[in-house]
Length: 161
Image (cartoon, rainbow, N blue to C red; front, top):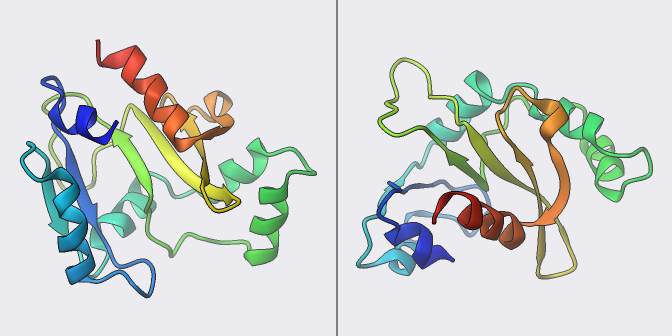
């Protein structure tokens, strides 16, 4: 899947690596870059998380609230989010796949994606859970819990023919 995304002739792929966990640093980012060696993927290391903070501030300021309202009251992740605190507004966006119209440029504020997949949690050791939206503003279209790989396979079927 990664290789298909990286090599697809109709996609330009940019990856921004940021230190979000203790083990994340520039050396780890350089090591992870090897996954896409020989592809057209542009990769950058953002040690101050400026890119993620800009997307949180300007594109996804209410993401926490949207996730909470999309979850059933008894959902495990809703409980976890409520217990961890009411506000993520000062946290950068990360583990998010964003899709932009061709030719979109970053001006004073980050561009708005027309589609995104957000990693929101983990069940067990391997299954990453995500949400999908047609557009950041269309909360009603947020879909609950598909694995990240399922989301990317769906995108591949829909857009990468």
